[in-house]
View 1: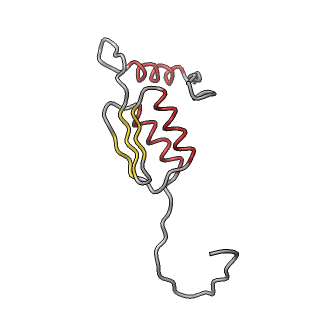
View 2: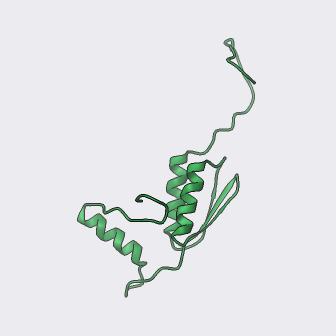
View 3: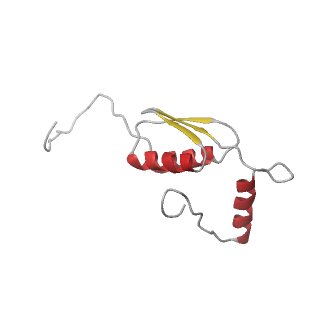
Length: 112
């Protein structure tokens, strides 16, 4: 199809594929990479932004797999506190309790 089309009012039939929400996919992928066990995320289409997020998470030690319809995330092994909690989760909770956010420097340029 090229150029604008005029559609007259009336009944229609057919299918439309709606791409996955980039915002939701970013959040799911980051949460999966910070989790405790491997996760698989089904989606409809990848964007360069999502691939860039996957690259950053790989640089931070997560194993991220990508296809057009699925992302997989295997969190990295992380040091643990004496009570068994992952150190990054422990730091995150502490930052939330203090009520402020300190940007984390990454190998991906900028801050996260």
